[in-house]
Each structure stands twice: as structure tokens, then as C-alpha cells.
Length: 344
Image (cartoon, rainbow, N blue to C red):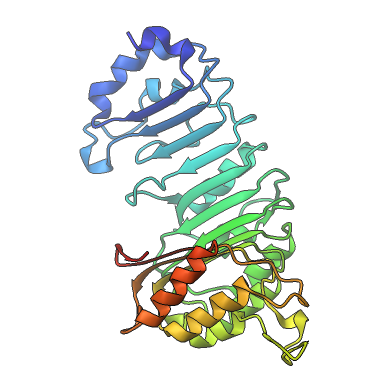
């Protein structure tokens, strides 16, 4: 009954428990026009549940061949993106292997996918780096505005294995997750230089050093959103570096305005295991919530702490009292530890 009205579908979400059992049901869609379908998600079983491994089912390969208006596609588990027939010249949003944590693709495959989707505006992908990525040419992609890159490899090249070969002149949102890998600062900064001024940056990397982070923030002056999960490197020293100087007798403190990092910041997120005191955290929030009018500093609008652990005594009565007042005056703030909401 449902397949009989497939031409009216606008969104399709398939979460299948057995490829061999379910795909024959969709055989009638092979080659059928799906002119209204715009969003599609397909999740097939993990490898250990596939009874007939090998080439993908022909129905799966051709499922979206008639979806001429498809704009958004999300895939997971055993769906080989390069063999799938979908409108690569028009699709704008791809989410590959990030719905679960049980699958990733070689970074070369991610590069090839970008090469074949020239109108892509957003890409989320989980990769691994089995061998160094050495594409035959550098890729200039003029439409990609958002890139969420997760590298699962435990050793070897990290995010730079893909970013070194990309130029994204209109990229404004970047998320890099390389939790187990060393940080190649020169390659990352070189990539930044080939992008538009970033507005949103998310870093989830245990091995980035504070000096490297500060150098990156000096190169990203247009950031309005910053999310950090950098292991044990979020300390009071880092909060002090992000502090906006106060005004004393009509003059700002000696720190020059050019040294103020991320002056347009409106959203701040901190994750990982935080070694920060309540006083220094409050000082940072207050300095950015109520900056000196003499400085061209944006007002902080939202703070989100979603961490593995806080230091003992962080949620002091004084901090809670001050956060209550900040919320009264419009600051959105949330603090969670190990999945447990601590505030509000």
C-alpha cells in the first residue's frame, strides 16, 4: 500500500533489521520516479547480521535513482556510498556513518564523494585512515559551507589526511573530532587560510595543546560559536586567555583589544573533564556577558557545559546564585555532568 503512493513521498526513513528479508519488498521501486522525495535516511543491519555479504542488493543500489529532487541523504552500516545511485549533481546534504558508532569509511572515499557532489553544502562523515590519502588532484569545492569530520583511526594521520587536499572558500561551520590522534597544526592552519572566515568551530581532540588552540583562535576572529572537548587542557589558564579585560576608571586593563580572542563569540560549549574553578568560570562568563562598551565585543548569549567531570565544589551556592541572576537577565546556560543535569 505504501509503495503504491511512493510518488507522493517527501521523507523516507528506513531502519531495516535484515537486508535479505526486506529488500524484495521494495523491488517495485526500482527505476520508479520519486519526484517529491527530498529527505531520505537508510539504516541497514551491522555486518554481523548480514546473512549474504558481498555486492549490495540491486534494489538498494537503485532505490533512489528516480529521486530527482533529493536534497538530503543519511546512510549508515553497510551501504556503499560510491555504488549507490542518487542525484549527485543536485544533492546538498550528506550524513554518512554518523548515526551509529559502528561503521566508518576510508578517508579517500569521503574525498571521492565530495568530488562527485559538486553542489554539496553540508557533509557529516565518520572516516578512518587505513593508508595515507593521496588523491590525484586538489579539490576546490565552492559550495560546501558545513563540514563535520570524525576520524576513528587510533594512530597515523588525522583530520589533515583529508583537509590537506581541500579548498573550501565558503566553509563557515567546521567540526573536527580526532580524539586519539596527534594534531597537525600546520596542516590545519593552512586549511583555515583556504576557507572563508569561520563562524562556528567545534574541536574534539585530546591531544591538542593550549598554545595550538590559542593560535587557531587568533586566526578565527569571526567565530560566533565555539565548542571544545580537548581532554585535560581546559583549565583556569585557558579561561583566563579567553577573558575579556575589564574597564577601570574609563580605561581597559593593559591587555590590548587586538589580543582579545573570539571577540564575536555568542555561544560557548565546554566538554571533556574540566579542571576549572567556579570563580574563573564565572569571571569568563561575566566578562563576555557584560563587556566594556569601549570594546567591540559581542554579548555572550548561551553557555553549555556537557562534561565527563567537574572539580569538587564547582557547583558552589555562590555560583548557582550568580547563574540564577544571569539567567534572569537572559543568558541561556546549562551544566551537565556524565549525563546528569546539574544546572538549572
